[in-house]
Each structure stands twice: as structure tokens, then as C-alpha cells.
Amino acid sequence: MLTIDFDRVRIQSGDRILDIGCGEGRHTIEACRQKDTCCVGADFRVDNLTETRKKLDFHRAIDDLSCKSIDLSCMDARHLPFKSNSFDLVICSEVLEHIPDDAKAISELVRILKPGKILAVSVPRFWPEKICWVLSPEYSRTPMGHVRIYKKTSLIKTIEAFGLDFLFSHHRHSLHAPFWWLKCLAGLERTDSTAVNLYHRLLVWDLMKKPAATRFLDRLFNPILGKSLVLYFKKF
Image 1 (spheres, one colour):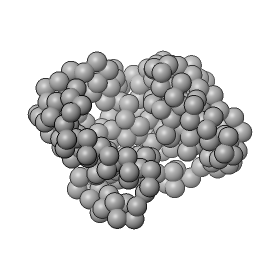
Image 2 (cartoon, one colour):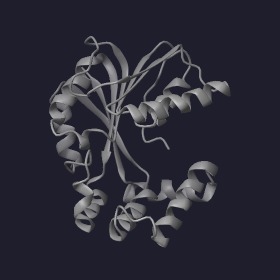
Image 3 (cartoon, one colour):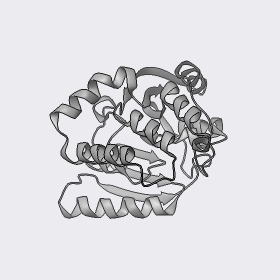
């Protein structure tokens, strides 16, 4: 389930790509499927990197990777161990909303990005996220959870202030917004909610089978219900 649109970031052979806050590796794996790339998947949590490694091993076994190299490392987005101007693409998907000092993280992402190259950022969209916060007080109090809700215009201005030009935006994952509203209503820790469990089965089925009907509905409702806001910037 990709949030960043790889068709829009113009990856070239030999590009160095960083997926910061890679989670279980969805964008890292896609980056490794691009021809002759050098990819780094980084996350604050070791367990996420372990899952990413397992998935990479699976894709390698079926000969689905085309990258020159892949490295996985545990690191803090606020203190990146890379030289300035060292990456051709930096992906930061669903990460900034977890970081109290997001300005420090943004400054680091910009520092390591080469001039003329793209930073792709996604965060939860304002109003679907706001509904989650209203429905469930515990939603924003979960350890390592979301510490803020972003508005599109203010986030663009914040990132541009570090020396980038805003290029374009879109929304993703409209089918996921109602799932999280249901989960917040039922209780985040509950596992016996029939509605939540049935909806989760639908999302898993959609992810695995990619049926035309749900793909069409997702695209249709993304401008209205898309849970993720995706922004693309170019460094001066």
C-alpha cells in the first residue's frame, strides 16, 4: 500500500534514495524495485527494520528487486548520519506527525537532499485526522502516536522555509479513513468489534487482490476522503 506516487518522482538509474521512518518497508521495497538504485531504509524502531528485512528477503527470493544496494539502519530523523547533499530522493511518509521537534527533522531531510532533487512527504490529512482525535481521546495519547494535526497550507509554508519549492500534492487511502473512524468509536484496543474486523478484512482483501472495483472507489473518493496528504518539493 504505497502512499508516495513513484511515477511522479522521476527516479533515474544510480539514484540514492532514503526512506526515513520506513516502518515495515512498503516504500523501501518499491525503491529497491527501481533499476540500479542505492536505497536506505531507516526507522527509529528495530522491530520495523526486522520486518522490512524479512520482506526484502522474500522479494529477493522471487527476483523482484533491481537495486544496486540496500541498507537498513536504526536512526533518528532529527539527527541523520549522512553528508549534506547526498540523496537524490528523500521519502518521509507518515512520520512528521510523530515527532515533537518536526522542524529539526525537516531541516535534516533538506540538508541531505541534493539541490534540484525531490522530497516526498505524507502526513494524515487534517479533517479525517481531526475526527479521529474527537472520537477517541486515547488516539492522540498512544505512546509514539500522533502529536499534532497538520493543515496543508501551513505545512507547505513550513517546509518551503527550509529552501524548497512546493511542486504538487494529492491524497491517498480514502478507504482507510472510515476504518479508523470505526476503530476510534469502538475503542483502539478492542479486538472483538464485528464492524472493525469486517472492515479490516475488506482492506486486507483489497491490498492483496487489488480488485478493480475498490481501486476505482479509492481513486474516486481520494479527493474527498483520502486519509493521507502527499506533498512533493524540490530543493533550490
